[in-house]
Length: 134
Picture 1 (cartoon, rainbow, N blue to C red):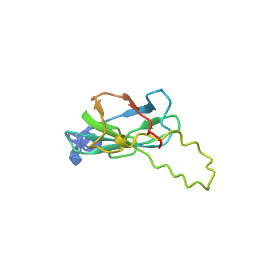
Picture 2 (picture 1 turned 180 degrees about the vertical axis):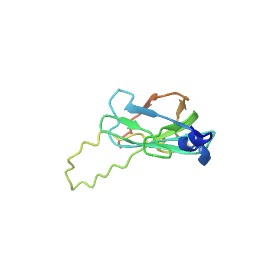
Picture 3 (picture 1 turned 135 degrees about the vertical axis):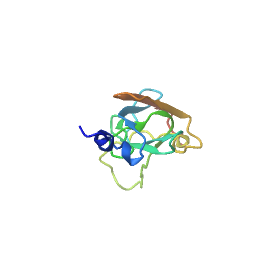
Picture 4 (picture 1 turned 30 degrees about the vertical axis):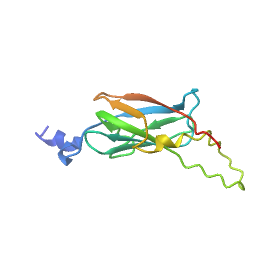
């Protein structure tokens, strides 16, 4: 192989930090899945985000530069955001499940931290609390 070609093909020549495959699940403290939303990890070192869409079973796959390339190694703060529309008029076909406490939706209030390792696959689980309905 031509020297430097592997570096160029791996994306390192673009000045991007390396990412590591990351998947996981977001669940409430009772073990039930968060069924809707987005998860984001903010790298403390690189100051870039990895994001993923939360599926109906609470699972997600993270991507930083592409939809599923993972996250950078190191410590991250995590947030879970949801958009649940309840107009009171429409009967929705999809069960949105319980809402997540809004504290998890902001980097300034989320208590969630994750460490991504430089390995073939990172499996993480995030536990959140349900929003208190008034």
